[in-house]
Image 1 (cartoon, rainbow, N blue to C red):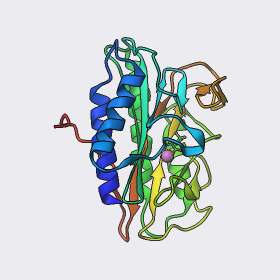
Image 2: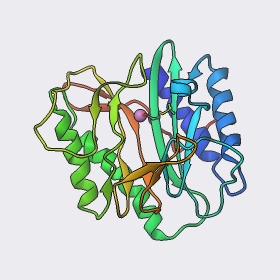
Image 3: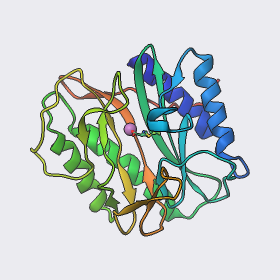
Image 4: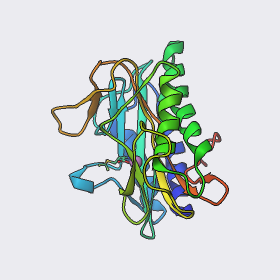
Length: 242
Ligand code: MF3
Ligand code: CO
């Protein structure tokens, strides 16, 4: 898991560095897929329930599961990249949201709040934590800052399969749900909207859009639960990929 997740983080660094006005989402997907293949791994999303690409790239009011294509990223776009890597049978899963070029402060705040929500979640994770403790931490962090958390899609266990139990909602009651043992690996992934937490699926049957039509953000890492806390396994370096 450590090796798969390290590669996931490195692929994400490469992808984020490629986000610029004028670049197509298909070009970023191709870079990522080639990077993963060249390291003896495979893109975990490709072929999953028929999904056609290595990454999901979702722009502005698109929340998740955007299919890469010939759309060009434009100045001020909010771009979410989600990708999974399978290495030696184990999977890392991570997502980041960034702005391309210049954007108004409210978009940077939206994105920072998604990252903050992920950090609020990891702050409560340790051996024996209940799923609801994680859910509650995310919900309280986001709603306390005026954002909504999406109900229809959730975080999850991850390991030999992309989606393993338990489901980890971004809303819920502290103290509820299953207790998580040390050694579990989880994909914790807050998904934030601005006015309504409702979403809809586009005509392509994949892209998930905010119902309010406003920009939204997604931040995800695979973490390892330990006796004293958790380790983020899909770290994305601030240094540019070599
Ligand atoms: N990271 C997402 C998840 O955790 C994306 C998977 S959907 C796929 O569910 F079809 F693209 F694989
Ligand atoms: Co995930």
